[in-house]
Length: 306
Ligand code: NCD
Image (cartoon, rainbow, N blue to C red; front, side, top):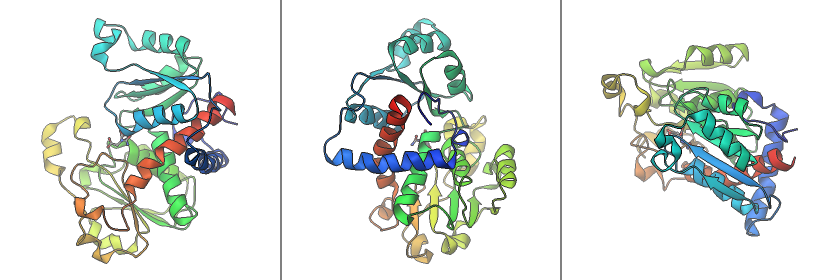
């Protein structure tokens, strides 16, 4: 089903494909306990990150190595021929001739799709501007499934930068594949979801409400997905100054939470979750980051070998 496929947006995956990825990820957790396998021996993955990354790049590389494959990394732009003015398309063409799968992150929306049109090898989008981050959404949904056994019938809050955040946007798209009870989209007025996301939610018949006050809605939530305000994507720095620090989740705020609430965050966090929340049972964001490896192992295995 997934063999040879490009993964540009979570919207392109069916629920059955997502479930297949999750089942494979469950198996990968077992594989990891045994130290890995050599199912992707002989395969090469290229990572081409034109924007900063810690978790996404390193967990893709870890996933490949744990499955017996290898990777090549474009490294910083200053160390590659991009610094000599080589264009993106030529760079992708070269990587295509060296690798069996290409992982691309870029600040420009549509860059991963463009790479997929050029390359014969499958391309996985590791984040394009404010638009899509499909593998992050898979990890987020997988973490919910591991915590609750299912993604259906949950009341889910998404907090922070819903306008510029690709992780928030992809998570919302991903959730619409399932049957949440209700979505609470919590953000400052100026960082509401974009029109295309609002239309997508409406077309899927998902019940959602847009609001600003976290403390009011918190007691209703089963899942709280927190995101960073995307400073680097604001066209006007003055606009960022107005909304920075809008939310801060502390132990005190969580006094009103449901007992089983889980808090997710794609990370990096800046100041939206206070460090003293890390030790509470609500904090699932480090576990979520850990699932980056088995989920990406599953995806690489299914794309490269079926
Ligand atoms: C996110 C991203 O790059 O979009 N990080 C990640 O991949 N885990 C979130 C962010 O930068 O805020």
